[in-house]
Image (cartoon, rainbow, N blue to C red):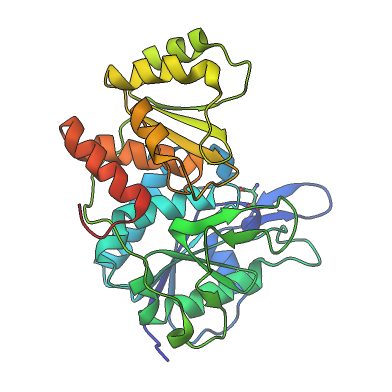
Length: 320
Ligand code: ASP
């Protein structure tokens, strides 16, 4: 069992919200760690963001990733990020895209479904589990992970599927890595990782939910001011037929377009995608696909390189 130094990056969310009977307040990372009592490992703490995670923009998430990177660079033996659960899947995915390839120590996200002040608050147990997991060096080979309600998930597969239950998170497509307390040796295969560490995310990548009456003109208008487009579609990446023409045209004019399934689609029709000139999100949610496209556009200078990177980010390919 390791006893190295663990760094905690606190970023707000329900895990740190406390209601004292009259008003809500936000606890600092230091407050959260202090109530765990004596810990096996020395723990340092930093507050990198506050508030609801629904308001965390990708640049802000990138700041969180940088805080993690700095802590690793400064020699932490493991890093824990406390984060709102609404967008944890995105921040953890971004951290995995950027840091996963060379992760030298565990990076573990956690949060809570119940506020700190609730009787059945899960934050304390989740944070304790995350700190313990961050002290297990073997975890790093799985890339960035998250631990919630006793379950351990790869960041790339993390999905929140319920808004209120304590067991709100699953791995898609799964299986999850394991459960807290299981020996590390019982964990599944290591995540295959993408290889490049990009320094920026490109803005102007938009996300649109498709529905049968969505006007093609609207899609075209929306696309006109976009650097890239993610369209959330039905089932196994089925685009309403009224949109085939406009999407085909936009993609063939050079706009990167990704189709993401709703709900998470892991299988898809490659032929149809090729014809349209679009990329499938390979089971990643539309939100994650948007981050992957932003990272790909920000990481390679020409379109061919960008599209190759995008595929490797979405599919988790080891190299490209
Ligand atoms: N409102 C919260 C958030 O910041 C939800 C949570 O943390 O569970 O995402």
